[in-house]
Length: 359
Image (cartoon, rainbow, N blue to C red):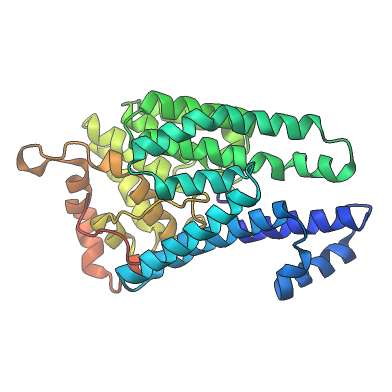
């Protein structure tokens, strides 16, 4: 459900080293194992070109901003980490202007608002797709063909996933859903996890419970790859938290509280601290490389989904008697009972940058 920047850096560098040394076949396990050991011990030995270094810097920036900064203890440390990542990305773009991951990530750090960043994503999308098409059409050797089989597509998929996510945040729900569908057409297995953004968007568009089910059936391949199923692939206990939150929202909005409470009860089974996550509904910055990696079925996944569901949770905010979806969730008897029986804090694993106290 998330792209690992370090793993991708390793795959790219190993493939490029195989090209330079004319190693064939590409599935040579002994060579790959040796090259991966070099990557772990001294990555610089594999970096030979500007393009190599550009993506390596992008991966380092992603590691800093997505996986270190959220754990920073002070605002000063967060600022330092962001400045460090921004420097890596500026150098990456300077080395390779076609590094669309670096250009996207740098634009996000430099944009003054989500709307500005979204405008950048929409403006440059044709260039991203044109570059990808050129790479595919020019793949005339086994190394390039291997690259365009998978790795070459990933920056484009991340671009689409980010555009869909930022469209949801901007309130452009039809646009968010359209782009998510386009991404799922290009990559039905959905390695970028854009299906989750689409599910939240469908709930914002006040889709019915049946429409949510139809979306999942239409994109069954994307949902099937998430984890092994022991029962029918639409079984409720197997639903991811984004689907359950959307289902809960649909039930709450249509006054079908049995459905809403059933989805909430399923979410509470995510772990011993799930009630805390549902009560606090902390917001965390979205990963700038891609959605941050969390274990499917974990409490961390629930925390991440709740953060991304902020536009849904804010529905009804400011209504008389605080009748918002966020309040209904936090004050629900099921959540309150869970709080009474839980200890510790589930939120600490995802860092201290969230804003507690509900949406």
